[in-house]
Image 1 (cartoon, helix red, strand yellow):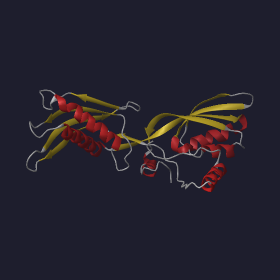
Image 2 (spheres, rainbow, N blue to C red):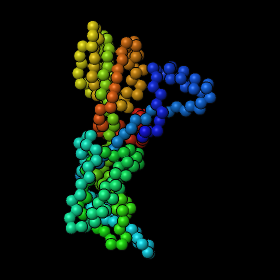
Image 3 (cartoon, rainbow, N blue to C red):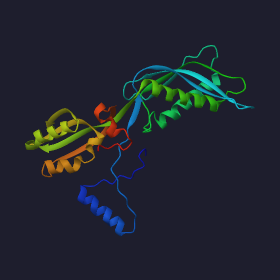
Image 4 (cartoon, rainbow, N blue to C red):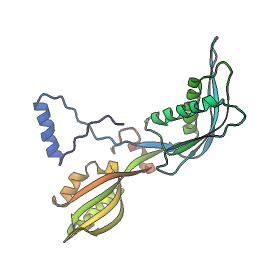
Amino acid sequence: QETHQTVLWCMGEAHADVVVSRLRTGGAEVDTEPVQVAMRETIAKPARVTGRHVKQSGGHGQYAVCHVEFEPLPRGEGFVFESKVVGGAVPTQYIPSVEKGLRAQLERGLSDAKHPAVDLKATLVDGKAHSVDSSDAAFQTAGALALREAASACGVVLLEPIDEVEVRIPDDYLGAVLGDLSGRRGRVLGTEVAGPGRTLVRAEVPSVQLIRYAVDLRSRTGGRGAFSARHDHYDVVPPNLVEALGDGSGTLS
């Protein structure tokens, strides 16, 4: 849904070529491109920032100021919003507006790559309102601006999806497959007997490293290996790969 791609699952490149050829023969216009991986972003460290949306141009204006404390959360925690406003600095009816603006900016992302942001907490601690010019829309905008300020002040961390992978192979290929998984930045969780002369390998591997794995595993095991994968969690992209993966393509150059 994020990448807006239709993914064609095939048994290999030759199979994909045949399927695409048949689609074109049938009159369909088909363009192919590299598979994209849905990345995420979060903030690198805590910060207290101000979201200020003030416009006065004669007549009814817009006025909203919110002071928000941000902090990163452990992977998988999502987004947490809390209000510690006292004394009515931000009127009660506008506190949900700040949260709504924050959530909208989370969906738009924290950087130019526009990956959705996750795993952070926002605490509304103070603010200012105007009896005439404040509104729901103004405080939504102030909340969004606060998150953008936080991204600038804290720095942005790129997160990539990690899959839990099970690989079933003949014992003769165990060393080659373990070495290949390591080369894909995989973390082997363990191995176990999967039948006479066969081994089951469990590992965690970045999704971007699995795009061609079916083809490569077949080649490495003489067509006798098989694997399954499911999404498990998101984790920080190594600094040396941020430029390659952070441009929105989700693929390694």
